[in-house]
Each structure stands twice: as structure tokens, then as C-alpha cells.
Length: 255
Image (cartoon, rainbow, N blue to C red; front, side, top):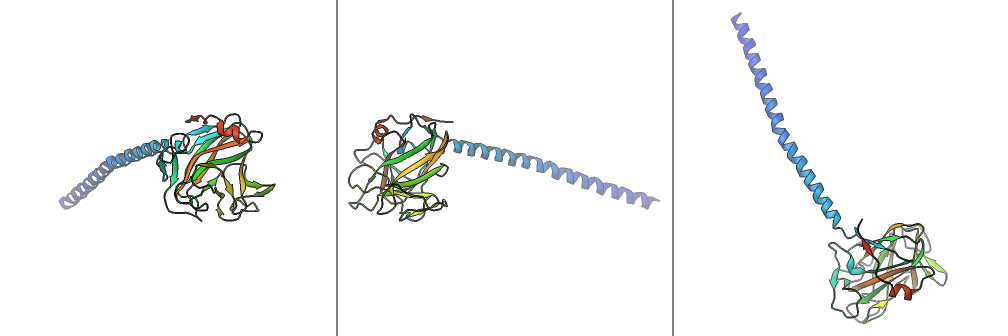
């Protein structure tokens, strides 16, 4: 009888120890879980803060069928070099692609510009750019351009249309194009110049169609090293380049 009672006491003691051990483990896990949750919350807050500084957060407002933007107003960390030493630029400066050539792979050094369109229609696109180094018309003279969420994005020359490769539309331009990107070039040496063409040796002007009011995304990426970008304009059918060039810079707002 005593042996039986002694055995019960041993079993009871073991059960109490196990219970206390399990309780101790659970208690130890709770602060760790709380710490992980706090770290996750802090990381989310940091990511939110970082998002607010992204270069595509600001929005440029179209007015009377015209958008006019200084390239250097893009915010955030970018892979393009900001400059102000080459005379003749507009605004407070310009951007230069000083990284390696990216002739066949668009998307490097992405610049994003959000455009608020209140006047739907087809717009002509032109940028003011420069060959910042060298004396050759066909080098350091182009960058990539894309309007991925517009109703249409095309080049036109004397009624002939070309579309970027990767959009499912044809015909496509001569020379480089991929994933909805146009290679956009100029060929003036020694000065900032308004010209934007696509299709090699068959220059097509650039157009984009916004079929309804809204915020659209314009993307630029580096292609030729030493190509400089100063300013761009878009103007709807019925407006002239002269009106767009002389227009006030588009108002910048934050959502």
C-alpha cells in the first residue's frame, strides 16, 4: 500500500514538473513573438516612409492640353547623374545617363513621371536632349521611353505607323525596341535640341493616346551613355509645339 502511494506521488510530481516546464516555455515564447511583431511593424513603417520618397509619387498636372516638365524635378534616389554645367539648359539642371550602354535591355535606371490628364486625346511627345560627350551624331544620342498604361503609344511618319515591340501590335520600328519601349533618339551635336524620333534611318515622331481622364505613367530608362535629358512636353492635337514650349511648367502635386 505504501509502495502504491509512493508511486502515485512520484507520478504526480512528474506531471507538475512537466506542466511547469510547458508553462515556462510558453511564457518565454510570448515576449519573442511580441518582439517579432514590433519589428515587423517597424519595418512596415520604414517601408511606408520609403514609399513616400519614391520618385513616382509626385504628379504633374496637364493644363489646357499641355504638359511641360523639367526632367531634373524627379525625386528620390536615381541612377542618373544630375548636372548643371552644360550651358543652355532650362530650369535648374538636367539628367545624364553616365552608366554603361544598355542598347538591347530597357529598364535600367528607371525614371518614372506620373501625369494627370484631364483632357483626353492624342498627344505629341518631344524631349529636349543633348549629346553631352563626343562629336558623333549617332552616339550618346538616345534613351528608352514607354507609356505602358496609355490607350496607344506609337510613332508616325507621313501616315505610316509603328508600334513598340512586345505590345502585340505591328508594324514595329527599325532598330531596337522591346517590352513596349521605344528607342527615342536625336542627332544634333553641341547643343540642347528639341527632337524625339524612333525607327532607325526612318524617323517617326512620337505620339501617345490617353482615352480618358486619369493619372498615367511615363517611364524613361538609360540606353546610350552620355545622353542628357533636360525637359519634355506633350501637347494634344490642336495645340502647337510653340505653345507647348512656351507654356508654364506643369504644376506638381502630391497625392
